[in-house]
Image (cartoon, rainbow, N blue to C red; front, top):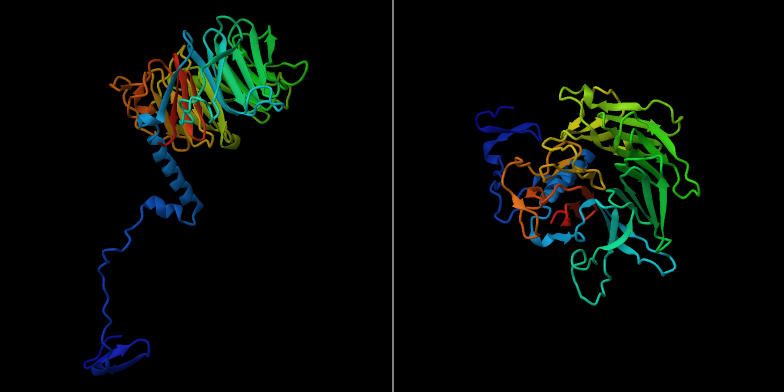
Length: 425
């Protein structure tokens, strides 16, 4: 309502009143006091939001920023040389349960490396009351590498698979030998020989089931605990360079450039399902050297030796379909064993390149954790622990053949050394 001359309108009482009776206006201070709290960062607002999607985005951004700072302080990096003459080809780490009778290995963190000569070495974390008095739980208190066994002379150890109760080692060669060490049987390693299986380049362990990536087939041993292990051959028609398991499904990456899926509930002679085929790509055929199901089996991460890395939707499978997420900047290599892995929460993908660099991406978006420098650009050298910039800025003395991520650390093995960086510090 418009005011009339000499009157004002009171909307609360819906009437006009003389201006003389109008109450004085209340003063409002529009200037924020000096000690007023400033607006919080958007990531904080998102975390406090009731929206699950907003909280998930905030958590992802926080983890992304934390990972980008991994190992930038030299005090949070460690390097251990491998035994003299050993070239690290495989690495495994776990929280070993040890033996129940107290006569064998003690429970606690335990690690293994496999070299190019068929040897497997192990080490354990010294107790906190060690006479050396080291305070660094993850650094100086690691014992020296000790030889455990030789799977096959002059045959490369291609896979080391560790759980809290078991270690499985596999070597490459004309006849496959598998070493199985159980925490409950200290000092004893069972050796399985598969004379009809050769050229094993990869392995996957799920419970007691072991899958091997061999010449022209994936080999399934359904139960390592069985007295007479039954071997099932899953023909691929091409050498297998990568294998993975997800419940009853087995994935295999082949030299021919295909990622195949087998269902162990059907007969072994059934034709596998082709998830993707590099021959359908305009860049041409390339070996599928890495496969890993993620998101509860809804997606499959596939890596090729030409450097292509991508995630494929397993709900709508077409061999010629492009990946739903692409991880750019990776440098592949033919004839090089390059480590690739995911973190335990499946939020990030890590890959070692043939250019001797390490890269990481957000698994869901493909965004690099740290922008990748050109392969020819100068960088810090990782031969010592004194360099700054973290693992994603370093050029290593040799390509990293093995990667492993735990809840608090990033481990890498390659050349003649093993590296460790504390995650996010």
